[in-house]
Image 1 (cartoon, rainbow, N blue to C red):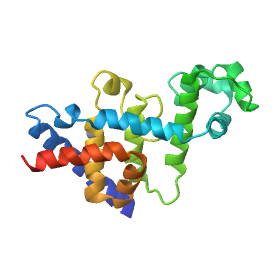
Image 2: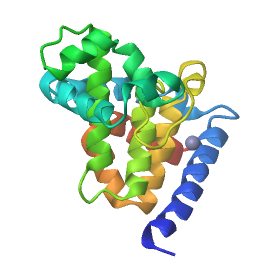
Image 3: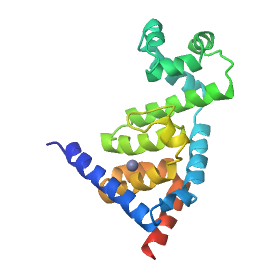
Image 4: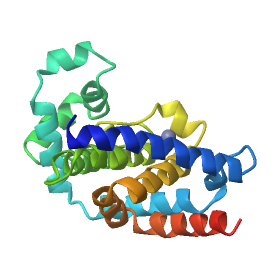
Length: 206
Ligand SMILES: [Zn+2]
């Protein structure tokens, strides 16, 4: 069993443990759901998007879409790349390839998410559990549109609005079990992390 396998086992345990505490403290509702974590998380995500240039987003989109033939992508509509391709329509995509495109704000958001996904996936010294923690958070804030490797369904994020609940669980397991992951969470989501600490304080004080 490799080191990452050990991480995997306990990460899930601490993750579920955090959900249990959250649910118990909230009296059969998730306490973190009514905290300020969710809005802080969306703010942090906007800041992350702002830190990425259009040029690097386009380049990342080209890299992602370039790996597969367009015809294959059109055939499989459940494929994440297919969804991206459909949302970026072929003409815009061709423009993206020349870095000349005029994109709608939605398209720019998607391309920035693709760049963020690339950062999470290809980050040096990032073990896969760290990637899983951060991936689930990113998947939540873009409501399931982009999945850097691990996430939940769109319904889970839009109908049940579980972003804060999963952030609470991912951050708690990172705090106990994965310092590297915690560093990345603090760096990418500093405001949500601050709100997380307030929730922990509330729970600790009973
Ligand atoms: Zn969970």
